Amino acid sequence: MSCKSLRDFQLNYEKLQEKVYFVLNILQCYSTDNAKYPVLRKFITPGIVAMFLLTNGLSLFCEIEGDLIMVMTACIVIFIGIGQILSKIIVMVFSMKKIEDLVDWIHTVHQDPSWYDLGSFVEQRLQVTLRYANIGTKIALLATVPTGQVMTLGFYITNILIFRIPILPKIAEYIWQSIALTVCITFLIIVECLLLFFGLYFVSIFNIYLDSIERLNDKDFVNSSRSHMRHYHQKHLQILIKLKDFDTIFSSIQIVLLGSGTPLIIGTLYLIRLYPTLLIGYLMFFPVMLQFLEVCIFGEFIHSKTDKIFSALYSTRWYDLSKEDQMILLMIMNMTLKPFSLKAAGMYEINMRTFLNVTKFCFSFCAFLYAFT
Image (cartoon, rainbow, N blue to C red; front, side):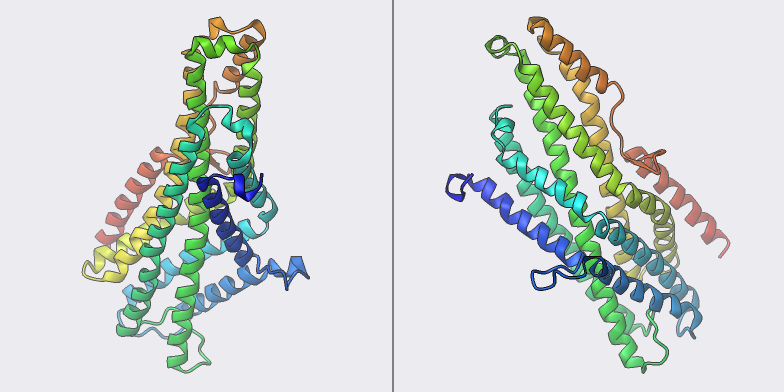
């Protein structure tokens, strides 16, 4: 499809896709002038973050100035946080081809005429999703970029060093700390925006599919063809395959999120409880909660949308369909008997119940720790 024949929202998506590929190229340190040694390039970004993680860990073995409990708690929380960022980057860097395939598939949804055969609502859904993606990215930038700068300034004013290179003079360590916090927060934004991008578009595509099922209540539409369900089955299968690909790629991230999210929430809550006037504690707490909430909301939406397909198909004029279409409809309904759920380690479902359970546990454990302080 030529650029002249593309609609505005399709052109806008292509601009967004260029930004996504730019971000992916940053993660794998790729450029047209640097196409050699693809394997070695994959270790550059994880290596940089690992170096920050190492210097943060060194601070636990160096002489600590100021309030011991506050500095130790901040060091441990940031150490776990950088470890989480490093794990996410490693997963993304070494799954780059599959991630690019998912981005290309979403591009196909925007361009492929067969998707528009589902109905006029396709364009409306994709336009809204594109708008939300842009708004979400801007909110993430506004919420996290100032956070890094305020944390850097706050640590400098309170004379706290949590990234140590003992052979360097103190002023150089503060400069290194500023670089480390800025770069780590930048990578955090990149990873979270990518997850937000996929989450919004998967939910949008499921909504498109659910909207299309409502057309089966239109008698004229049902009678216009005796093979509608082949098209529905093809799209449903396509969505499930891509969703399973997404789950395969990001299941490791979900494990890391569950494993590190709990101590991060406990650590930041404990810091806030000990020092309720300390701004840095709140600046660390809210991004931790938001990234955990983002994944749990996405998991909840995916589960609920796949669950709705069964009841939506049952509520249609299936009795007006041809025998062949009725058989295909039964196949789709059978596939949706067990709704798709995002799972960490293939066992723990990621949804709002998980978020509430983890949050309650963290608040309870934080109160237990504070009682013994």
